[in-house]
Image (cartoon, rainbow, N blue to C red; front, side, top):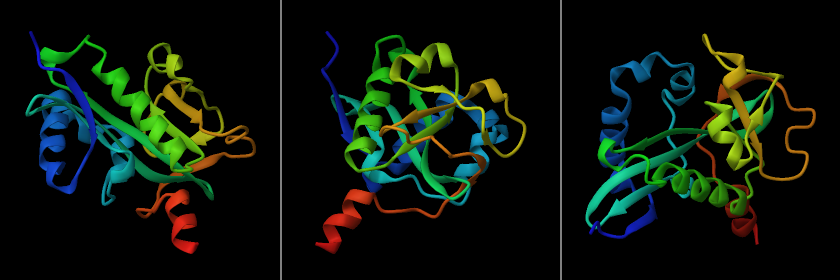
Length: 176
């Protein structure tokens, strides 16, 4: 029987583990993807990045990165990586739900990704028509999730990498 699955926030000490999961899942072809342009020279937001663990072994990861759609702050979801022997077990779905819930709890307004609407639609992601990612990208695969009512109303334009940011909730707490 397989060890129980646990999802934990990615710590700085786990960065190499997550990088290895991504490399094994996507190979060097990942560098050609449009979303990779937004991740270059950026740092994922640790507070909303998670690793899936089976016992002492990391078997999956999800990361979110700070971006901006025009002037509107957002997060870029991805990559989501699961070890080949662990796929089709619901690990990716659990990672996505956990990361999106954490982003909502931290006060982030919206998430963008490039992916299959048939898969990501079950998490609430919908096609975005007014959002332009850098590089060649299939516009039908640009999806968004509003983490609060109306989060995409009036939001559009080019998507740019944003400097690493602190969550809106953490900024409020620091000001108190």
